[in-house]
Amino acid sequence: MDLPDGAVLFDMDGVLVDSETYWHRFEDEWVFATAVASGDPAHEEVTGMSYGEIYDYLDREYGTAVSKAEFVSAYDDRATSLYGEDVALTDGVPDLFDTLRAAGRPLAIVSSAPQAWISIVRERFALGDLDLVLSAEDIDEPGKPEPHIYERAAAALGCDPADCVVVEDSVNGIEAAVRAGAFTVAYRTTHNAALDLSQADLVAEGPEGLRDVFLGEA
Image (cartoon, rainbow, N blue to C red):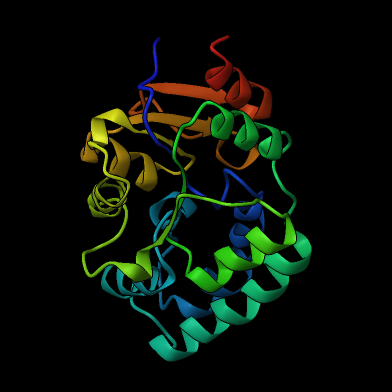
């Protein structure tokens, strides 16, 4: 399958770094166990959302036992060590970025994470210059699974969404990219191995599969 030759937009969590494993553990140990009033949410219900929207969703669907300020503070506290110490960079990302830059393709991170969290990852792993870093906190519209963040990213890069390739791992993120009209690559790894990612145009199996997609070997 031929990919569009325009900008490449990467989600961060679960794609560039293996953070979803750690966030899922945090959800099990505190969010779902303490912050949720009742019920048994599934990880895929909230993965890909910003933490403010996670609170709003859980409050609406299950009720919450903590204030939004407490919820946000807990996420911020965990993020510092999670991104600064725990996560690992996905194998091959620096080389893949270099390949895309050499091909003259605009390169972006488009994430539900706040800019401060993205900055920790960029600095820790020396990801280099990017044409755009867009966070859900930078837009006034609802975040993933709504398409706005990818529409805004394409516009900021001077591209039509249909000319962009988006790499996402979550059901919410994939839906956002598809609804925006972007060519969507689902990145499958351990944390989302059991999920239905078929809404995407293409599924990349692990780091080697992701590399192959952009080297034209898939």
